[in-house]
Length: 359
Image: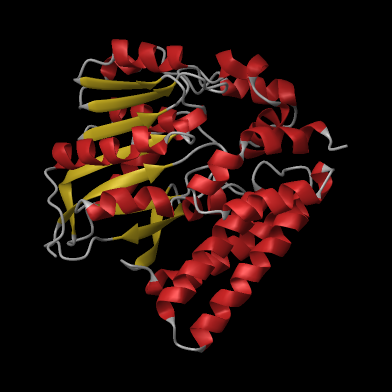
């Protein structure tokens, strides 16, 4: 009999994993093969190693396209092995290192290729992946991509595709408490002070248009995006997908694994301290400072960030807002990606004046 963590994963994570690049049969095989959460990371890492071996073989044979496909799948599979797995940080770090390694190997062979970049912030660096659309004249508009509580830049390839296809560059970066920054920089609520240095970095690039910057965020990133544009006016448009209005106010209804992950990512010493810090991630008195166009997406069945939060954000923002409510959508509406992914990419392209790449 599976423990309640594994049972939770079987019941609620299929859409999340598969829509972001995990093979559906891998999900079924791995989740059915284990009964205890303690085996989660090792089981996923073993499956990821199969894809990694295929990718390395393809590289050795000079098949770059195949290598990128295999290695990107390996990276996201390793990533989901350590997803919410914070009770054994040795396993967590090992899987994370493999995800980074495989993704980095894939970058030059992706279509379009990716560039690993370092973004200075407060004496340190955030790590990002910049991808630019083919067939678009420089400088091109760029979408900053900020993800959720336990997401990383290696998870965003399927999301990046929609923006790239419409002539926008993507800059996916690990913010404080995420990915490569999670060990040294805790989660922080004042995300305008994270987005600002990222915009500063964009302005150093002649191939990116500093007048046409958008930001996109999912889950906790759906808070980071609105918080960013409330204070960082150089960002011209924002997509917020299923973000919280006040993370602390949701605390008691969050799954235990989610609360555990926030405790670790916020560098808190106890759940009580984590809960207190969660209240620092709030749009109270902040949403009314949002002036740029914003698209807000809500899942009607979202158990983490209820649709009421999206409605409140939409009602308090001062700028023009497009609100999309997906009545049968779960968290981030991963189960209904066709209801918002193309639409949000089209919307962002219109806001930034992007044009589709030449054939």
